[in-house]
Length: 252
Image (cartoon, rainbow, N blue to C red; front, side, top):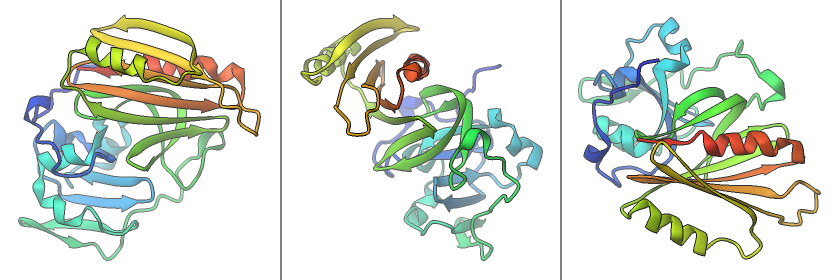
């Protein structure tokens, strides 16, 4: 698969235009440079399209990406006045502004719900963008939602909380601080590197009353970002897929 070449490189993204909440956007916007033509907010977050995509195009996950609202606001600042619109609303472009679509956010009653996932949220699988320069590979279908400015991936028995932070330090310097600030109860520490990224992980037994397995905390540090994952799972057999999520992080 050809790597995507984004219209706005990471060093041209202006910070703090909008909150760093995860959203989905079409490559027609982020790669081809088209303005946002249609956007809607469902209970999993915002979705942005140029408005000229075919259903076949949208159904191909390779044509979509996971970004922060701030990144999409950099591509089209006309969306800014509407980002606090209620869930369930949709907006259509008219010239240089948007008007509310009376039909609201689309609902697909035929959408599949694989592997017992939550039907109230969309599901994802495969590699997707966290920001313009960070991505993660989801090895199996998982429900996706945003909560407290984190991306949350869920399937029965496993929940991953993911946050992306700006990093203006040297990766080694940032990683040293992460290690120093780790929980004193951390154990099973691991360090490795891949594709120019420094990784660190450890486990913490939080003595959960539900008896779940000790959580896995993972960090991927590069330039210009670092990604933090907290993965909670019920059974020790799910340690491997939890580690797979951490190891799949890429920063370019």
